[in-house]
Length: 336
Image 1 (cartoon, helix red, strand yellow):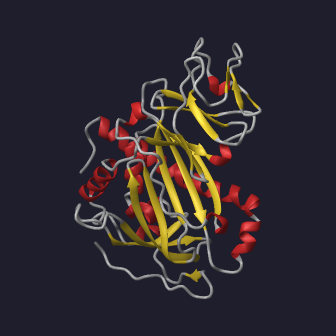
Image 2 (cartoon, rainbow, N blue to C red; image 1 turned 135 degrees about the vertical axis):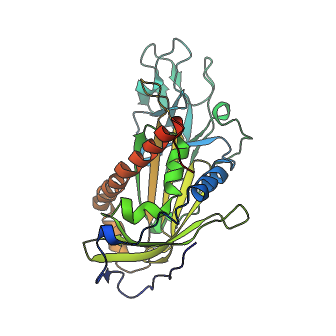
Image 3 (cartoon, rainbow, N blue to C red; image 1 turned 45 degrees about the vertical axis):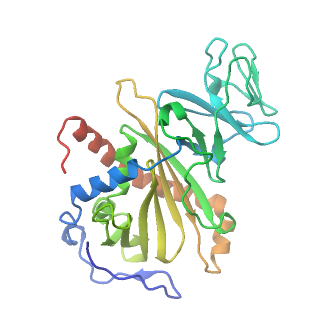
């Protein structure tokens, strides 16, 4: 929908911006960000099959002594590792008298109800039925056929990722008062990046956007990540939606080529006012073929909190976007 150029990949990934206009004088993108284009992309994304799989958290959220628990679309779910380290999970309500299993401890791979001591090893027991779960190495998924209502699949649709051994991985999660489709709509509007997040993005141009179902269903963007006021890292990235609750941003040229940022949206239980809530889980898998990146991986324990803080700053903005979109839709004032 607009033209651009592929960022050149030089020996030094940084660029010094000279003479760029201030925020208010940058090129407007509102004519290109047509509501119908975004809405059509969201409609196609949310129509794709998911196999009834939902992200419930990060692999690193699992603890040896506590289950990972979520209330997904009104269903309480618990996930933990059994005595052999295998991922297991099922309903988060004890079948005996309804105790919240998410508050119960795990002892040697067995989840023990803290009300009356019912012990669960992940297999069927006393009316408790396990659910299909999946560990993709970064995220934990659970399959809820009663919620998804689709043809179930053996595994979720996981975006193509860089080799785990070479990537710096971190996961952020937060909750917004919105529907999953509002989160997906935010991610399928790349035009807002430099306007809405000037602290992080500059010089953004959308060089390819789908005009209809027959096109390659992706958005391609040239953008620079801001390090300081004038020092930036230019890249080309593409946004795709492999399943209805996931958008993957992949760097296709420039520093960090093949790095991926995955955004997953999982419906939760409504809040105390009956408003919908969505869990946003964003996984960052950064990689680089530069020799110095080995040092970055070695410093991962120090870098992960910084990356999560940067992601959280962006999502403070983007959850406000998603929540506003939900309010407009519910009042019938949504444009497009």
